[in-house]
Length: 393
Image (tube, rainbow, N blue to C red; front, side):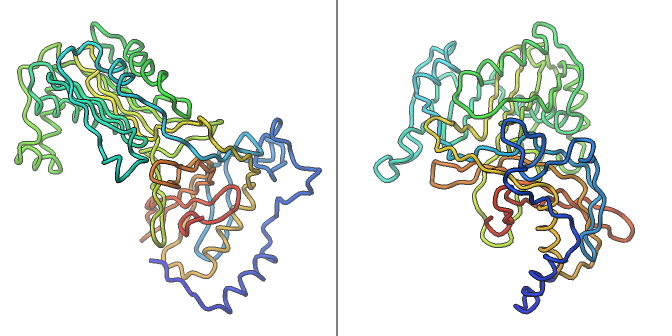
């Protein structure tokens, strides 16, 4: 555990040491900076590609070092902007997800628009047949009733697919009646109709036929961490599955201007004090028996009427100096090593319904304990201001 020294005299000493640290500054005169349209690195990073090594190794201060893969940003300037919730109406989402379900609908407001007027545009639609659509402040969910109506069986199948997608990430199984390309197009065809920031990228895609699902479920439910789900009746043992239970699981992450959007699989944003609300940007979908049965989109933001601010981003050397200054006054009990460095967009909540999208340098790290390296988390520094996200930067 790190113990921070907070004496003011040492903080003053840090300022002095920063100026004399020996880390090469990448600050250049304005006339030497690479313009937004032609940049190949950070705003202050004018080194040619051959001088921007894919791996950086150096000591920052006592107990903290860098031995990291580095993914450099493509541009010198990036847009920062306040996002808006897409204007998704009941009629639009009904037609997008429920066109084949002709049973009666019930529409519910998720919040009292009198008390919370900013939530007036959020709602859920439920059909008598069991389909469900929910649109709430950046989160869009669709669920279809399972074939045969056995919800616990369907939940178990989805858990099997999700577990495989989270561990193996990819396989090459093509299911009869629906190819992998057709399955992906089924999901992206819906996403393309939404007013959402980003470009999707498949980060997990697995398929299993009904026989493989039964076998995988048997192994899964024998695991200690899953036994309790059977005991409480959340998941059930599977038998007698048919081709109607064949399934695909697909996960997408997103990028904007070549930077990844903070996603569900990312290292969590760390906070030293009061946490700030951040949102993931990810999409998970289930296709069973050739039809879409689950669609969960997080981070559904729009650039419509956005207040865009184009800002220069700091180069790698400048960010590593920020990291050094942060940790120099700490007592490091276990050696800390930064293992991967890249830049991403993080959506921070500004109001109940609006998020501000900002670029951050991400530094994944771990500790060496008793001679063994253990991955631990990721620090983030605002790529424009250099401030530490852990302290609200």
